[in-house]
Image 1 (cartoon, rainbow, N blue to C red):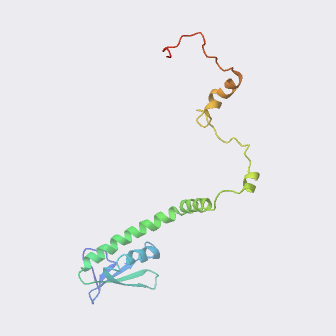
Image 2 (tube, rainbow, N blue to C red):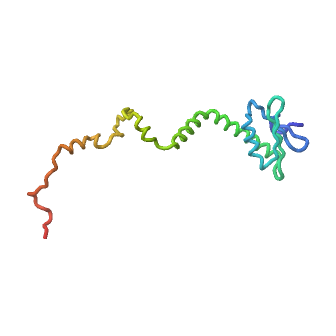
Length: 165
């Protein structure tokens, strides 16, 4: 087998017109290799294997109308993309789990009356220095002022603007 020109040494030409790609397990996890090769199934024939060190060997044969260089280039791009997605998923796994848990717990439904009866509503819990969460009546104490003020009387001695016929 000879090296494929323009590609790393881990890409080698086969005698039958295909190419073998050695994907080191330390760099390319199995999920990334499976994802990248799955994306190429419509453009090439794919065979996966492992060597004695546990590294993945991807054997590609382009389908009719596809060139070997295009398929190998697409595999390279897909491998890079899949590795990036795998690493991002591993980093964000805790965040994804917490968001999923919150969504699932919200799908359970409203709390029952028993749950509300056991809940402690005495905790104020909200710092509101701008008084955004207070009602208008509480903010301006209008409800107390309206309860103690007498209603204004109409002016009986004033002249109406228009005369009635």
